[in-house]
Image (cartoon, rainbow, N blue to C red; front, side):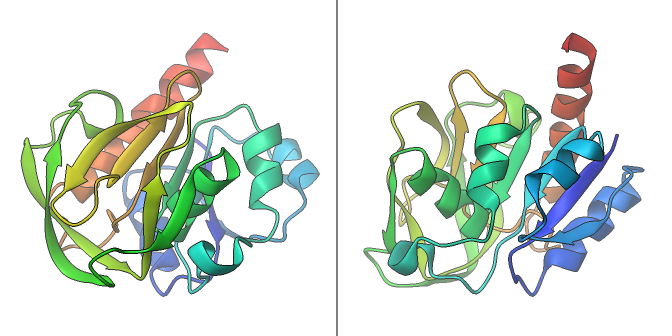
Length: 195
């Protein structure tokens, strides 16, 4: 599976790349200014939108990520700022968390155990590191997991294979992070078979 990581400036982008590589994906890191035509030409099976220093809830900008979401017909996983941007792009909102920034271990509750959360315990600890969060779910999305402080921890589009996670599955403190990455790779494989 060829799954590239779009670098939005996260300190952990290389960890996302490393987990994908560990799981035998053909992966590389590309800047978020990469033209969408270049990504189409690469014949990708999936795309991961990294987190970053961008305050999506404040300025709404994230390179060419909007083009990727509009023009690529492949599974896409947004992490942290990538998740927030995805929500805003499709008509939701991202804003500073009602309880302030969320840093460190956070317990989430799985509301929909399929898709990207298959085989993840119904309550699991994840690693958060964000100022902003998805405050209004986009109309065509549904919530897959939530926490006490953040109601939209994981979301997915209702008809397209677009997923967002508020936390960092690539960090070892996220208990089922590797399982989530395996699930994303499986989703990419299934999408490729059905195309």
